[in-house]
Image (cartoon, rainbow, N blue to C red; front, side, top):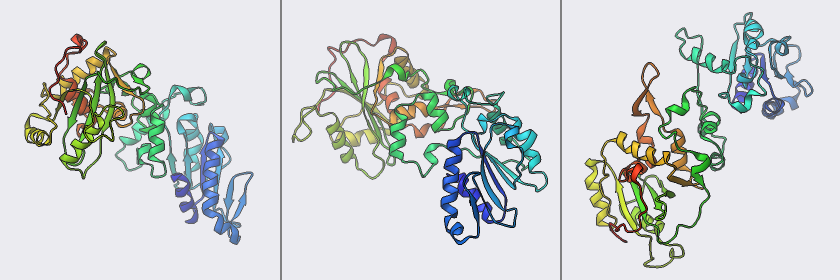
Length: 399
């Protein structure tokens, strides 16, 4: 808990600390970290601890660090500090700061730290705030401050070095787009869902449990090139319905040769039970598409290793996105729920906004979304309104 570490450091500098949160769980977590950090000094008798009131002080001085449950101005009254911390600020009544918090710091020119998570419908029932977006509005106002009075910081769960990445990925699989953006990315935009490039993707119906792809289903592969972040996305198409199923994602990072990638691709398209066979039987790979018009040399390199990749049918990004979005809107694209990176890209891919906050037709940080690029390259071959069963399609090549 970073704020506990910061408050301990300030306390050891002789500053009086007051940490406030509206829930006992937050108080207990903060108190545990503080006590753990100060135990050696407590054992020497330099500081005294009051477990009931959750404070540690240096006898004979005003130096103290305290954790206190606070919901509103009245519950904050009666204390003072050099440094005030208001955690889960979005759940507190906004008068907590204006009526009591700010005056508390006047005499000693103190500092206040506000910590909040973007408000959600789940938190509305426990919030004491009259305006559920008061914390968001304060953050926006502070972000625009030019006087030097305010500093603002934004962190996502991915930035936290103390959170297991594996556990985070596991958690993300069970979250909605909105929850992911609020709880994991700490995004706090009123129009956030409309800013999503793939906002039409419906997790409730289009994220499904994995099943074994039938051997007679054709497979299509999208590729995004690059030495640092090569990527591939594998689609199977149900000949009876024309539905697409994203069944594998490939995002290995840097350090592999073209030959290494091709061997990995061949393993992915091998039929079940053929993994250890020297020349395995594979799904019919109907098409592989990827790269820009200028990357023909890379495509030739893959072809030399037996993995032919064609240039995408569409060259511009916007029309490619239209194809993918159109297929999603028709509820014809499904993603297996044990995939991690592609769903995460879908939940995070945003349109850029102009200086007036209006949505543009440019993807924000487009180069980050390698698997989304794979989908664009591959699905640009299909017209959403006329997708038909693929019973008699002829394969471009076999491996």
